[in-house]
Image (cartoon, rainbow, N blue to C red; front, side, top):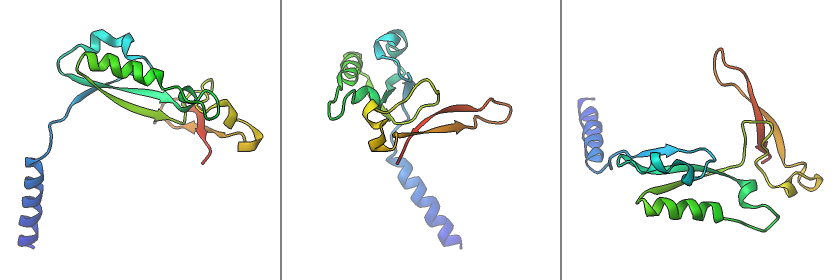
Length: 133
């Protein structure tokens, strides 16, 4: 048993030697990087995580628009920051449907399902949409 513990501790210590330092990223939700220049241009900040909905990236069937990602990427690059892209196919608000309109048709069985989100004890229930799998 003692040998196993020594082996596990040695393995963990060895892996720590090669681990990179944690980096600070701002979560901007669906906002553009240009709306947060002051926060981005802060030395400890290494980049930004930005949410892009499927609907935004594919406005029409088989027609893609990555200009928002490109714009955010170029702006962050100018400040020597990284972009963490979060592709979103669900929402947490009823008024925002995250999938392209063409999926919300009979051909795709309306494409989405209403979801309920339990935010925690004493918090109100949230609702939104999730893409059918």
